[in-house]
Length: 525
Image 1 (cartoon, rainbow, N blue to C red):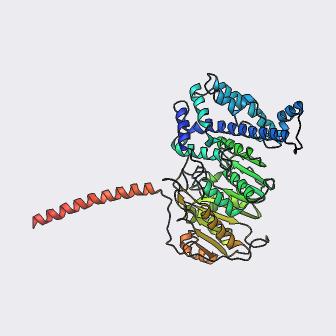
Image 2: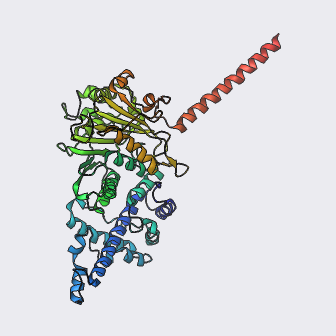
Image 3: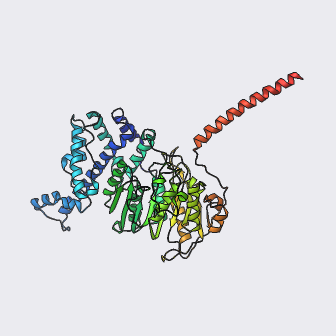
């Protein structure tokens, strides 16, 4: 069964308490994450250093030698570390050195000096990695004691990549802090880290074995991390994929670059607003995997150039300032190769929205056979938002000409997974490995040549385009799979309850007033 990743909430809360008063809440992650990154680089150096030592002592190894000079030369050779996707970390920039000096009055200087040393190594390694570790501790309001306290807390094995090699530790820490302090962050409900089990599901559905993977809203890079994990689990080669991404927030972009650097992937990540400033105008990707911010309003579609190549028609007809959801859809479609497939996390409202700019795009997508599948997700999958979500799978290989998949131009697969998942805590639901397999295998069975798919009442239905057109282009799976169709308005349960409570209290008051009038009328008889 899939876990809700590492449970280190207590340790992260303790780290937040160390920062409190000296650092604003929305900046906590910007002090914690660089330290964890340094820790991971330091651990990786230690692992490779020990590995080289073992090879030098192994009589069956090409490295074997008893020559002390040669041993020292090999252990000190930066190229030996680079070839293993590691940097040779000097002692004064190592995690052990910072830990040993955590109680010193000048620990803030030592941290910033370590950052500077490693930053020079990173920039030399890859110019895209510039400014990942700026000197931030000396100029902060943190005391030496607070800084040392954070270092000691982050020395816990839970934060060790060596102890937890398959976990996206940086992503989980990021999720925790933006979830805990979302109000201080001032971010909209749509700005959030994508939970591991949703990313795993998307990756299992798309199966990105080789080719170009693009995420125009790449955040902390979780989609890329899980794609790499999928490839390694299925015996693929990570050198067969290249990663492209765009992110509009500098701090989040840093985190993504940290994540990718740790995993030795070929990548090109640029900063900018993907909707209004597409940094990859000519890129055609084999896979687009994305969780764009939901329901973003006032995104200024008027600033799009007339004839923007991404748009399906005139921008007055195919965009709306009320929500960017369908501009994202047009962007994803534009960036697909001739046989590419996109998997997108989207707000439920997109399945039925009737505002002109959104309805026109959805109708166009259905009529032109762009939509491959829709998966409705259960609630409580996200720590940081209660907006109900679904997956849109868009594909350019629906004609069956790629040799692997059958022709399915006239169908859309609907999957209702709204009752699936297991509560990992009171607030958080996760998909188990079995849940992920059931959904992904249903999709694969449906689209593959030699089709062995059949509808499952209440769960999945291959509906014809004509059926969807008859349902006024609504894409809610419940309409098609045989469960009661729920119109989800995207209003949070808590908000609905508050409204209902207000209405009920008002009705109670009216009832009391009515009862009093009836009694008064009896008295008059």
